[in-house]
Image (cartoon, rainbow, N blue to C red; front, side, top):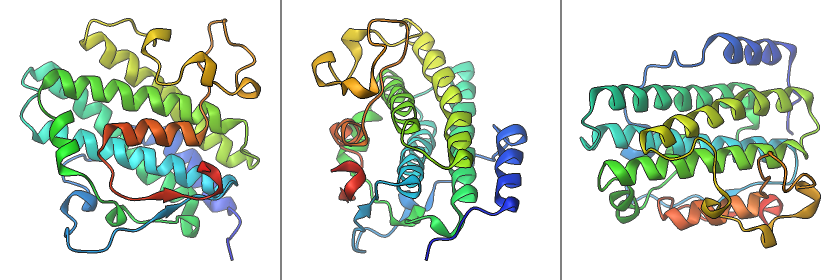
Length: 240
């Protein structure tokens, strides 16, 4: 049986959200990267409820956290200031992982060690500085679209607070990395992974105005799959 979020968990959420951003020590590879390749690959299942949505957000944060660890270890980010900036973003993502796992508690549906990565896909995105930064932009933009899209379905106000406290940080990340690539700080329509024709109208009533587009979990999975870095199958009502 899934437990309700306790008042202690709510206090923990506020503590992490207000005081812990950027304080994680981003020094070791997640277990997902070090996992033995011979083990079976877990299917990640997400239900269409608050627990499923927050676990789905956790998956995105795990992917970002692992990516930044590998980006720094690749040796392809040689400029000291860029390295420090990418490391700071990685610290944030590692903190987000801890934060969401704290909020979910026993409602977490997968462990970091359950995740399996595709070496050829990782090699492609880690090929050089530009591919690393472009992938960072893609992941961060995707995170913004995902959190905004999920926000309309969250019913638990504590979970909504968790998502809202993260999405603004994701937006600052993408703006900063875009700056390193000399690209506009906001995503252009021509850069979006989901075209206007494929946007869900009910989620995007403000299209044509200065608002971010909202993507469905199914659209987010398609974007993540296009990066070819995660091997775990994903299913469940949330992404159907």
